[in-house]
Image (cartoon, rainbow, N blue to C red; front, side):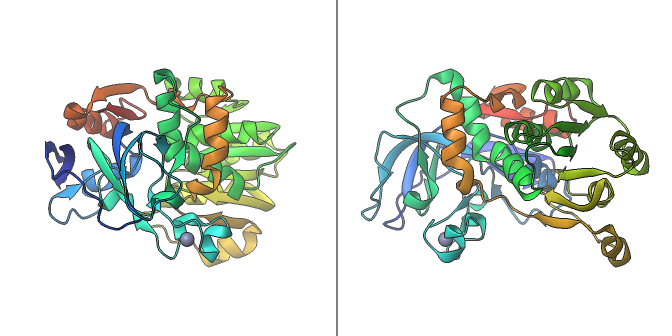
Length: 340
Ligand SMILES: [Zn+2]
């Protein structure tokens, strides 16, 4: 089969990989319908994360089940399924508490490589959620978004305790930040401040329910959020970048007693103890337990109540994946969908 492999920073190729087979009796193999490039794929692509030899890429996927192992009970060949970036049993104590991305048996899909024609999914019964019937083609991008960026933005909003009547600020205008705006709207936020300097992203944020746009960042961005909230800061702040600046911007934009939901994969972030001590904010985040939210998100999408697929502003065939990486790296595209 064809699959995307990163050889060195900036050197991503589509090449022949071995066809996946059932390894454990709890595995499924799916024929991908679509996959995509994640903002977090850019960290190794840019050399910020070390590239340790040729690495298969990708952890976002939707597709049709081709084959299941002997112990798979709920997932059946022919079903259209959505999964997320950690396979999980969905039965251990941590899964049952809603933290499937910390499952005691978790397996990172990124290490298997979902930017490919076929994917082996471990722990299929716990990981995959089937759609009601085969979805029409126009719903595929939104279902693919549920695999990571929507689930992650949704978790950020839940971790930030977004709810009716609250003011929410969103740091980061990538796909996760934009879908954090969508989630905040769905969860009943009264006011949603999107922090973005890019016109096309501002437009999508407004479409997804943002009420205010702040173009400043760092200290000036914090000051603007304070201006908009009677000097207090937002109740709930979504952090969807992962840098020192964005984390501090999120913490300092939050009012005392408020909550930060952080889902940007952190790189070299060090939180100053005294700032944290006097901030009086709650911090919660990490790799999103997307599986917790998937059944609800799949329903919202299939009922056409949300349209998260709009974050894909570039669609390419799998064989042109390198162009998709390049476009996202240069911020010409928010997110690249790869058709298989
Ligand atoms: Zn588990």
